[in-house]
Amino acid sequence: MTSTREWVKNILLVLAMVLGSTLFSAPAYAEAPLAPNSRILFLHHSTGEVIWGGGVPEWFESYNATHKTAYSVTEQAFPKDSPYGWKNYPFDYWNIWVNHAGNVSFMSEPTLEMLTKEYQVIVFKHCFPVSDIEPDADKPDITSEDKTIANYKLQYNALKTKLRAFPSTRFIVWTGAAQVKGATSPEQARRAQTFFAWVNENWNENGDNIFVWDFRSLETEGGIYLKSSKAAGADDSHPASAFAKKAAPLFCQKVVDVILDKGDADSKSGK
Image (cartoon, rainbow, N blue to C red; front, side, top):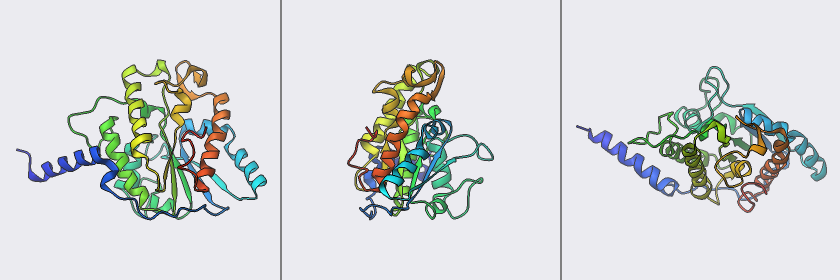
């Protein structure tokens, strides 16, 4: 027989999944431009590295010279391959930043309590295996690494509550990178499209310190796969370098719009 404690836990998990952030009100958020010397941290893996190489540091150098600002942008692999593992999916951000929150790193990875002391803007993303979403299990489980929409929603809603606890820091999350047609199934691709549409249209809310850059829409142009013309190869879901050079300035402009307190007003894709 299911214990009362387990029954209550299941009810709360379902409520969190269905109602999401409506259970929580956003904390006070300073609606004003950040300082002209704000520090930006970009957490990524290989897909992010390709976009970074498309001209991100050069774009900020030019912007600073033209606008007399001193924004600094730093990139960092997160989580690292060792000891944590090369995994940057919803579970992993939840695991490091929510489940193991505090002023001490977890498996050599910095927590938000540590990062927010150094950076005014923190950007994080998922690499394309995030799109390999399987059907939901009977019960959603926030502690599960299984890639399902129900688990992702629980982890994202917990992350939203955590990110809002640092109203002086602004967070930008990329919608998850897509897979090329030859590297996934139609069912997985459609589930990924459904989840990241939810991130854009439901999870993301105006008036708080969290912003979404819709990288996925740039990759797919509204479809369910990474367009072959934007991919590194027929079976390679990394972005092509030519596409990276076009996407990088859109990403940089999104970061600046967030700094200038225009993050809610512009297109989420930066176009």
